[in-house]
Image 1: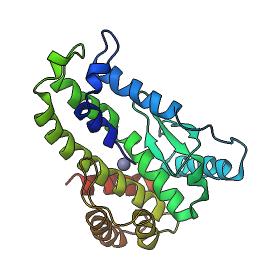
Image 2: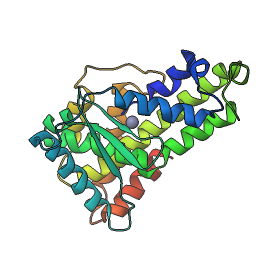
Image 3: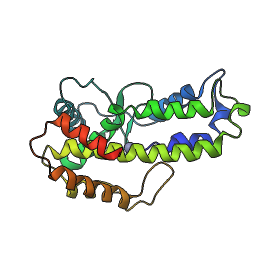
Image 4: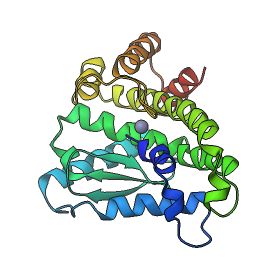
Amino acid sequence: MRWSWAILLLLTGVCLNAAAAENIEQVLERSQHMRLAQRPAAEADSPAAQRVRHSVQQLTRLAGANVPSVELVLVGGDLFAEALLDRPGIAVSQAVGDLPEGERLLLLAHELGHVRLAHARALKALYRTHIPGEVRPETTNGANAALGREAHGLSHRHEHEADAYGYALVRLLGFGLDNAFALLTRQGVQHDSATHPGTRRRIAQLRMLEESLAKQQGLTAAEVSAMAIAWAQR
Ligand SMILES: [Zn+2]
């Protein structure tokens, strides 16, 4: 749900800590590995972990047989979900299994949206454009302002697209705006951040999407997903 680290990394001087001869993609991927490794382990057989696995399977089945499979990495600790940067997969904390079903499905479908829409690839490509080749202080100097601005725009667009994809999919299971509102306000109303649109804008977008989806009847999950993505990218 959050990629704030991607920008923070650069602004907090992670480049200076890059291992020898790493490019920016490797730095970003390694940083994610390190953050995930710092989390406590999940209790893989716990009811909460089983609910997460079940919900991911349910969403994968719903998305259709021709959609590539997505790896699920279960971790412990507080409420957390994030798309992996180095492969098609999502890291999800077991605590997600304790959310009410509609919120759990929406959160997971949002992350699956990031994977399906190849957002990690686009974000890494943007970083690579600004910081080509080996990451060294001299290759990153001056990249911060332009990269920060463009990464901000790209991240916000990605969030809206993943919201639209996830909402349209989970709506097919009978959940809707009330569940999205509950999820998005769970940690209070957030203002715009470097990586995420504020809560009010995200909810406003989903209300408009709901109006569009409500006019459509009898579409397949693939058609609904395509429509939601096109709507978010308009
Ligand atoms: Zn997200």
